[in-house]
Length: 403
Image 1: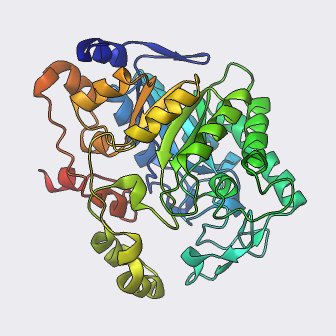
Image 2 (image 1 turned 45 degrees about the horizontal axis):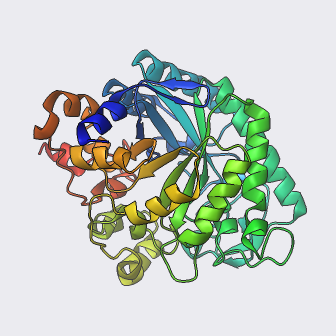
């Protein structure tokens, strides 16, 4: 496939299960920080309507909690009747712009700074120290028991039905980045010796049960994607060999498409982002003084800059392409016309972007109009990550500065 043919394919219509999309460009889930007190407002709706107005085929509302006991942040939305009207407004706004919209369903597991409402402490696959909650009153995490697992499955099932009723066109199940399902998949955080731990097939049991619960709630034709790590990004974590096998299990379980990613929020966050560390911008925005001090002293090791290059997950993604025929969404280092074309030339079915679309929400339309002369301008400074904590939520620092 020539680059020109690849771009024609990117910008042409595509199907994802029962959903017709106007093109193969996906705005990936990047936590917006636009739900103060857990309530989505006009900013969140406009953010995703703006992405649709700029031409993306599918935009993804990020990190939607399935329960109040599965939240990382106090200002994080979870799926309940109190947010239904706002989400109906959001989905209608995206549809008016000709786009489709997906909800990313997630549970934090042990990675939380909020005190759960119904249980004494956060819970994940195994008991552990919750470093992220050390200075927020939740320093320890317990291991989920059988009743916890049944409750979590019920929560995913209910959240999926709610999302469909609210007008969303697809669901992305978050199985990456070190949140609950990723914690079960990773050998570094799953130390169970029961039916949910040990060999990969057992570590995949809960993610597969969640997939089945979501499918039961939404029906056969409704698109379900999952975000999965190609690698956790640290020694002892999930690696590409097991990730490929995990994808095969998910495909056999009826998953419609896989969003390939990497990194582990509590151990290797910059493995996902690449580029400059946003730590210097994050520290003054941290409201907890103890947490702010810890970030000053120890944050440099976790948030160390990592070199950025276009298509930085490509080698691992090629391994995944060889392992499964399931539709694959390439994510990681796509900010130019050439890299967008190459992703399709490599045999991936869709392309997801985050920072490049924050920099230029009109990227799709501008690329089509300007062709080889298009320049996105994202510098991979990652200050957009820090902006999540600012009033108004995530923004490109260059756009704020008027650059």
